[in-house]
Length: 180
Image 1 (cartoon, helix red, strand yellow):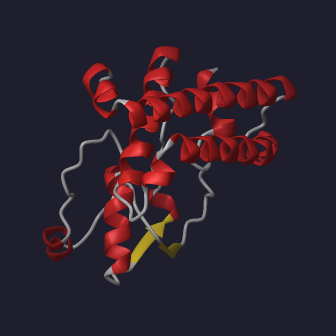
Image 2 (spheres, helix red, strand yellow):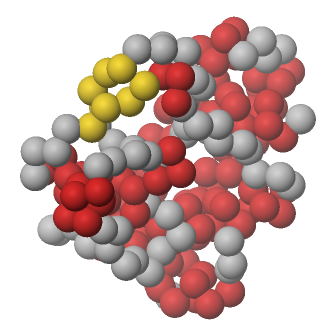
């Protein structure tokens, strides 16, 4: 049931089932191939975070003019967390990572602050109000499951928001106490 609740609001989009090769702006490291010289030129930089290295490396490669492609038949399945405790830990790590990556941007202090956290939380609500109904039909979620998905997503994103505030106030606390 947890996977159906996550499917309605999760930031990973459902597989579009488009089997052709097309240009794409990024990649996930668990489903990525490149020529050796590209991998040698663009190693993953060390980062004190849980996730996000793929997006950071993709941005750097895009900035340098490296073209990336995606084939629809090669998409990866990203399962929902296996338990409520795992979901809670993922939300905390997600909040920490949001602050970590925002702080690295020029003038990122505002986006990393609780003001930025509040804006992301409000945006998540608006996004879920749009995405959950759209996905409910495609994923064959009943009305009750769609409502549950929205409410679970609201709780999940509220934990992210709280973790962002904690990461802003005490950056080392989450890294010290939460393992993923």
